[in-house]
Length: 536
Image 1 (cartoon, rainbow, N blue to C red):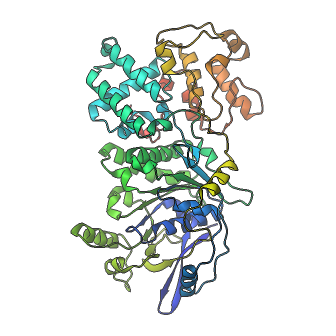
Image 2: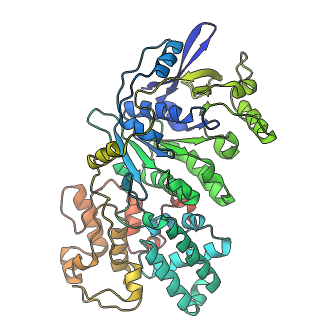
Image 3: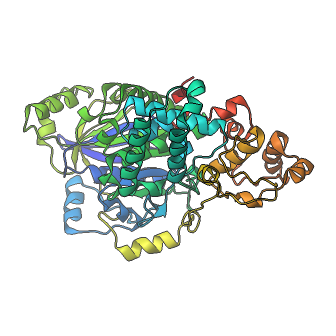
């Protein structure tokens, strides 16, 4: 059953009209636009708290630090009292939201990591700002690493792999194509520049498990996952690529649910213009596909940006729920943006939409949500209702106390560095119980290499190479493909498999591809917007 979420109140002709967002249409996506200082952050906070109250987990990036206040109960201030009197409503029941703080750099929240392999060559190429030729060489590096069972987990693995390709380019030229030394050098320099900006900390293990973000508290409220993005925003490509990777992981891992009474998760994409700036056409097409298809997974995506022109028309057309704060028409481009924004709303005969957009005050907006039949309502001018949580940032001590008592405290704090491409290529792997003592980059046995590859993608409990059972022991316990499937289904039915799976609800496709040593397995379905991004 649909749940109406109160977002704003419209006052016209001495009548007050409640403007609700219907929960069963919330996964039709939306956008919050408006100039700086017009109230977008408070609107985002009201929406996020409304979703949390009905049990929907939320993810958002906090680019200014203001959203951290959602972890504390609000309080009545003179300005708030004035707004409540104007709207003719009582003060909300002040309450905090259940919050989990995250931070790519691990300073203002739990660390967030992904492996190089999971990010994939397309998103990594965009993060490094590579040209077409350099992206081709990067894809070759991933392909050769896959074929040789070399795991690319962190930046040093990719550097070692690139150096190995450069030193042995002639050996790979016939099978894979030309590998330019100049392109290798350009990629290495881009990796160095990224490391200097702190991006190197994003890559590694344990990798983020999105299930840890999709939690509810004991009262049934959805957790609000807040990413500290004030420092991250100084590296715009890292910021936008990280959020796009998260969106692709949601698309790839969540099952189809169709139309639901409320979303399974809501994803707010703040500073959305960074996602589309200088993005190649092929990437824009894939973003459009994901935005269109991810609603069937029960995920609502809301773009937050200053100007609606920042969002391509193909994506803007997918956003059914809209909140438009004031735009200032100081330049011809601004005037064009005002007119474009006005034309996207369903007209209201009692409003001159284009004129009103420039007149709106702080906390005031033009609003159009989908009705009970999925049609856009006529645009209404309204005042955003006050949130029940604190407006503004919290102290460092308050943040640290929340981090220490988090449901994922201690899970991601310690980085894990295990055997991967770097150790194999550099010949630093000691002899193990398997009797393996390769000192040069080996072409690993398919089942053995991809059995370890499955472990590399696990975000839960990666095991070091030295603790893996010997081949004879694997045979006795059901090794290889049979052992992988046995472990998967053994855990599902309460049995004991060879490799412990903390999350047996992972999609069968992703688990099988990363475990079974087949030709399909070698063509890893990476977290690059799902299988639709894979070049066949």
